[in-house]
Image 1 (cartoon, rainbow, N blue to C red):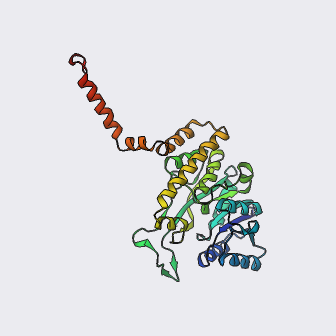
Image 2: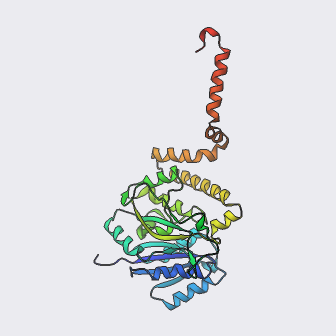
Image 3: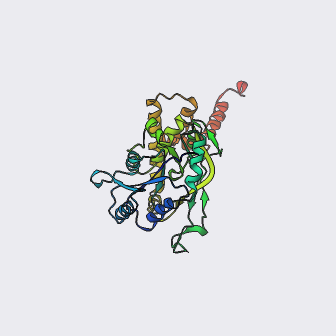
Length: 323
């Protein structure tokens, strides 16, 4: 590589606290690839995280910039990612949430892959769901590691290769556990100009898959078997709080319906007629649009009803013509 491309690293944050936020920032400073800029995008924080971000921007003005919404508004994850994208100057863009971390060689390994595959819109690997994070070199007070250890996301059924559209979208529609984490991806800046940015009416949930789906429909992506990031599982995360309040399942259900409905409208708006995509989308929507019928079929009740109907019909027919 004659000239290193610039990577714009974007951390969005809202009341991120101190410890996790600093660890996220420091994981970018620890990158072995040195040509990066860091944009700290504030979603209207009211705690110390704004001051932390400003301190880094003041201390490292050549590497770090602080950006915020007009009037220090809270506008959600998608709008805040878009804020960072608008200020990004790099050839590539990578995202990191304020409570997660990158491993030191992430950019050093990812950039050459995209340089080697110019047709790829983005690349990503597997993500470590990180239950075993430690605090002061001790196991955290909230740590279900004995019950559920760290594990890797699935992300694909094919790895270390370029996958054509809409392969990865079909996989997600068939199994919503097969998806990339946003903190894993590296994406070309040009992609946002070609297909648009994050949909801002998705504030907290499924905003990543909405954007990724637009990419999956249009461009090849490179999927690696490597792990370059750690997704911290902790009690103050959005999903953990929802689960502890008994709302997690319903929030996920509503979010998935909203995503599938958005995808249906997007396919129609863009006049995408791929029959396989439409077939898988209809299958994914079926349980939500026809819950009673789905419940019957899922419990094999429909098979029982059909069998009963056949038996009644045979009983009512004359003996001479019964099958």
